[in-house]
Length: 181
Image 1 (cartoon, rainbow, N blue to C red):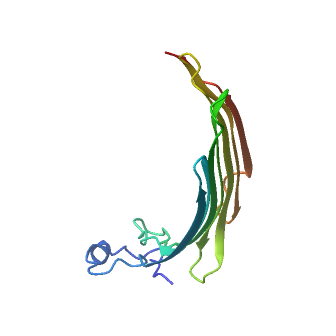
Image 2: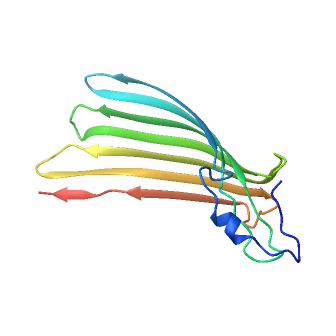
């Protein structure tokens, strides 16, 4: 573990200031991967992708600055998985010119690790976002688009430093910007 100054021991600021070469607890290991596929035709496209992020890293030591203060050297373990979808199809130019869709889902967690490797606090975040848009064909100078957008997020913190309550956010919006030129 980290040396902890005793209750009556003075803090050696000069030793902390004299650190050279390596910053303690600043190592990192990260692994990422991603894949995607799409189909593209004369009248549209549809694509999907997946990404994975996994990282373990240290946060530089917070040295004690007052007698009796604890020194900290947290390490974080972070994982995120994400899927995205995007597509568009041309409808032939009647009333509608095209239809577009976008969606994404992400699952994220990070653990604050104690010196012994156990999880002190865990943060979890799951999100979903989607959008559907219909684009009107230009009819005598009149054009526009209409659609709906949705967002959902579930956030939770568990453990020693769980100061935030579990919460869920939902948002739905409808839109229809129009233009006459």
